[in-house]
Image 1 (spheres, rainbow, N blue to C red):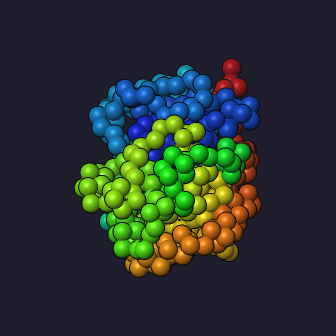
Image 2 (image 1 turned 135 degrees about the vertical axis):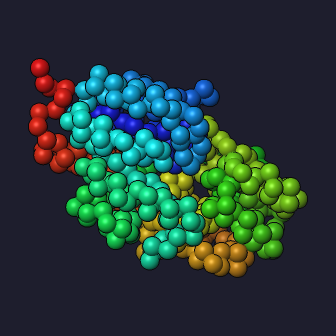
Length: 382
């Protein structure tokens, strides 16, 4: 199958990881993939496949949204006409281009699928951030113009349906993780940081990630000198938080780590992974930690609470994160048998429901279903 993938390659975020992992896996299955993305000057994250690429010009881009130039639409249309894909899959980038894609693909008679990543607060469709609410209100009327829209959980499907997107157009395909790469294994990370017990946060240092309650809980808890907290990631709040929560409290700020092998080494050596977010979609960082076999704590936002149900981890309340962590951090410090058990359950949960292999199989089935309702693909026409 010939697939035109439209997504992000930088700056690093969950959308970037999603595009990299899915396109890699599709190529491994024997599909032809062309990747159309916004041009970048900086070096790309590691482990990208070798495929045909088209760089789309932009005015501005960030981890949250992208503003293309006027020329981007023309270049995208010309590129799709030249590539002649069987299907177009857009990993939506919160960009004006998302809204004109259906019209472009209709003109070219190409089936179009979208993955809608935008985070939300959780059950009951409550939004902590007005930005997320605005994104859902803005996108809902347009998502019906796509042939299918992929979301990560039933909760998100119900939310979009209540906003007017026809349920038959919404497909639930959870994020998946490569359980071979992200697996329990040897690590020297504890020796490197002189740690007996190692706790990790990995993600953006941004308001919606709610990192400060974790830092405050750590500082206010009776953590021993041998217990260390690693903060992996970068973001707008890093410079304001780092001076107040440092090595004197057993906290190390590692910044953004592009090297995937290094991130895996950290996860394999950790005892506990903590994600205190106010909003999420379905966190790939959480799935990677679970697949690595470490105990996981995450707030009940997006689909994260659903991932950790049935004893696969500890689900936190967004309103009481700090007080809960003040109880749980010393508990996990003093009882390694508890973290070992939770780590085993976390990995088993991923193996049952969130493997990348199952994700790709479901995606292939969706592609075939959509193509079954279309005329002869462009690539096979005379």
